[in-house]
Length: 370
Image 1 (cartoon, rainbow, N blue to C red):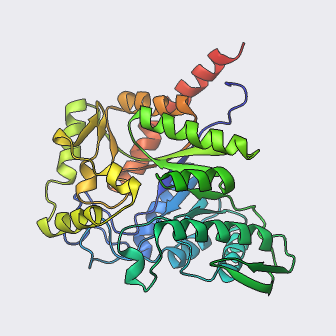
Image 2 (tube, rainbow, N blue to C red; image 1 turned 45 degrees about the horizontal axis):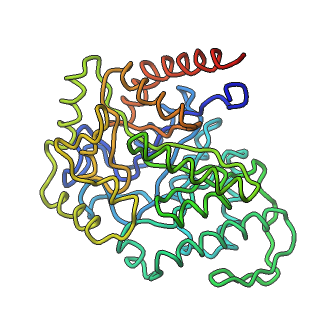
């Protein structure tokens, strides 16, 4: 196994909700302006990160729902134009842009960026969020729609005339020219059996939020087995926050400080999202445990103020490396990392965590070669 696995990829995150030292306040200390997000992106590009995930949502999911939120596609397009090397992993919710048009938009942005675009398909999303913009579709329907979107994009990207008569997508002689230059990959997440099945059949990368090792291991095993049954190979990515300090006690104190000034109104908004959801992923992230500790170095305190990925690895650089190594051993080949504030954390992780982690992986892979 050591000989065949690729070198791991390390990505960063674009904070479209805003950023700061304190989270869950009514407004962000650093609003998500183009100037600020460009500074985050330039930091990650300068430091050699592989890609940037830009999430998608319809109201702010980290501060008050009325706080500024950058729109995903527009911001990604602007950021593509001011970068040269780093890839952009753009989250897309199926159903809000007609599939034939979205395929063309992806191909166009891929050309603008010089082939640096990948797409994170988000069929699930947040309870009540689709309805805000007038889309009412059940969980099963969202996944069926996502499958049709992925199939249609791949077909359109051949440049041929395409007709398609699906439940959610209909095309009559549609065409996408020019085709993408960089072969956009589909990343897809979701924690339900339906999500795992869709990823096994259609995604290149199955993307998970961090959970305890045994749960991630079981998820990988299920998706890998289903993909193999389809004659496909899926790679695995992990999304996590990091809170890193030289001293473990300082790291835990820094984690607690992140949410120490959370506004009760924001906390209530987040609780309403989880209570109102049938979605497996957000419920798993928000499970109630003492001091938010879901493992010796796993902390889900962020779930009190943040929708979606609400768990962080907390510890010294070496402890964080050891935690990440556990996930790498399970088969994770791409890590989408973040920390607060994003610019300082990006530099800190690049200096203190990634060199140690790369060295540890190289040593273990070397030992695995007979």
